[in-house]
Image (cartoon, rainbow, N blue to C red; front, side, top):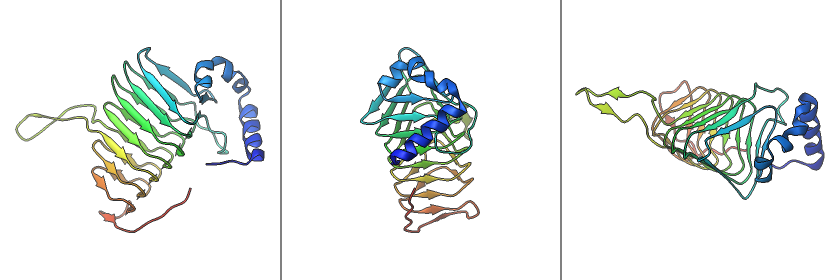
Length: 220
């Protein structure tokens, strides 16, 4: 996720040309700016006063400066006592929507990229490891929102934590359901719905009903 000096200057120039208001971002969001969280292109953070954001050993950029196209502004919304932990450098593109319910926890590892219009909904806990690529319009939600009844009429749990390991690639328009565990190095093909365990370094293809146990490697 390293850029050359020339690349950084070019990206920053495009950022300001697209939206001159970005010049004011360090002033408008100075508390986030000083803590290493940079908001551009109208993306914003809406948080309850008791919610916490921890930026550890790096910076988070919320606003796409590398992609030629730009989505509508996104947001991070955090309810009471929610916690967002960002470790290392994290890039979040325009249009990403992240919602944390009361007491929920979201962890995102360093060198992870979340691309445009992805949606992450956390009611309990979601952990995303290091060096992951979360593609455009991916949905990751740890809850059904509503309750489902079993055959005896009892309420089934509507929420279960999601674990995504290191160096996982999730293709466009995938859906990651509650209780899923995607182990390190796995590749999830576009439009796949995941519910359950995906073994390390395996490949899941949309038009196949099962996991393909390839020893896959991928490079961002």
